[in-house]
Length: 132
Image (cartoon, rainbow, N blue to C red):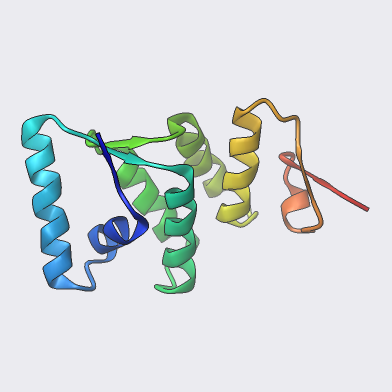
């Protein structure tokens, strides 16, 4: 298995560079034919959310739709598939920033009862506890 960097995922989702977008599409088609898959780390997932939001100005639903699309692709293997599923589900209900939700969900997946933060918006989620 090989891992994917954030820029590969961005080219696939945004296709703002046609040459690179086609290269990614070809890579994915070949992998599917060969029964291969690609690893997506939590870090790459976090960067993807950040780039879609801050650089490409995707709104929350567009980002969640992109993550949902990726989660259905058999060639993509997430570091924490349960976290990705929970992020999509929670992200549609919550107003907490997706990056923060991801941080909190990863911590919960690793057995943490909460994530301590100074972020008031994040602290609105049960995943976080405000340090005062």
